[in-house]
Image (cartoon, rainbow, N blue to C red; front, side, top):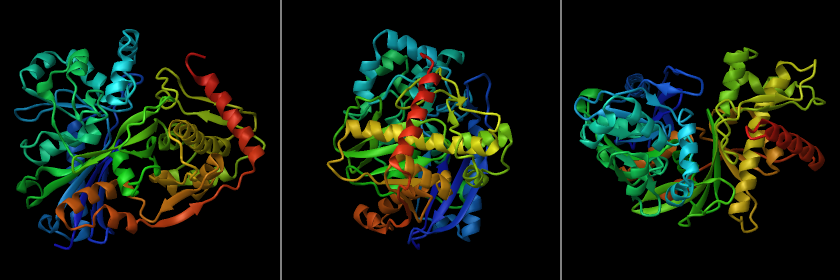
Length: 497
């Protein structure tokens, strides 16, 4: 069958489908954006039906562009925006509420209430996560409390919970499979990453009925088979991973100490720690990197909520650029004597601060500050935040004297200016791969190797290829001054300050 694998990459602002051939080259793709809903300040929702329609459309478009039929596809791999919550009726599959998106902050007060009950240690010990509105558990609890009769219906088994992967698999298989994978489960605040099982104590605290929860499988497993009526033939779904873990796999970060950072709507850095569950002392997350053949590999993760979204703000909010691709050229023209800092806390600050009440601010403006300085500040904010994560990771997990090399992916890495500035701020090499679709590639590899048409882990790692290495060029004094200014800007932005 040519080793063709279809990856469904269901993201925060759009759904994509990409067909890879047996040599892991893209031969067809489809992409469709969908509506972002903001019912209140700090609330973010998606319509699950619109997501579903965008996925089906994208798959059909990708097959058409590839000139292939569904029967030519060996397997499907799915990767998805993590932590986003959907609840639907077991009979008929109708969602009972819009999906509550990972960016949503409506449960901030609930998280504070749980913290005051001294429960954060319990959650962190079992899940590796912190009590923050980012994660799925408090969102699900909110939905069960605020949709009439939902908690009682859930207890009776009438309702299904899932992250986006689970919802899509349910729909793709005609309701035959209610499953997820270990990486998505590990982001819910309800899954014990040590025992690899849903945790009854945590479910009781959050008042979530266990009857609603999906079965948790390895990242490469038999998740079900698509309905023939959807695409013209049944296709097995053989791989699933949350988007950041899929990117880690797509970057072939299989060895402990390897690190990748994805620059999409947000920025997410993962450091492979192997079979060791490293407990962060610097407010990073301990999470499951992947689970294959029943063996769990762990990671330290730093989550930044706003990366590419700051560029979208420049384009759609301030209207100082027409296209995201303009940002690097504009930033390069910024006045070097101005030190303008954007702290992009539009939806709070993630790691290592975890301040949901912080709000975005700009510092250092003068009368000469204009679009170029705003563009540079938006791009540099991503670099500074990555530096904060890297410093925290080095404190938690010693690099054994080895130089840290950051493998990068996501839409922002196409900008040479941004990647050079990232290397300068990190004082470390930054590697951009030849294949930038690493999230989709990771999902495709999980499915392809499970189907027996793609190489194993070792063979896949050998195929990873670097496009460009960016080496630091900034002098130490300049770097130190810029980082000191960033830290001061963050300090002024934190809600407690």
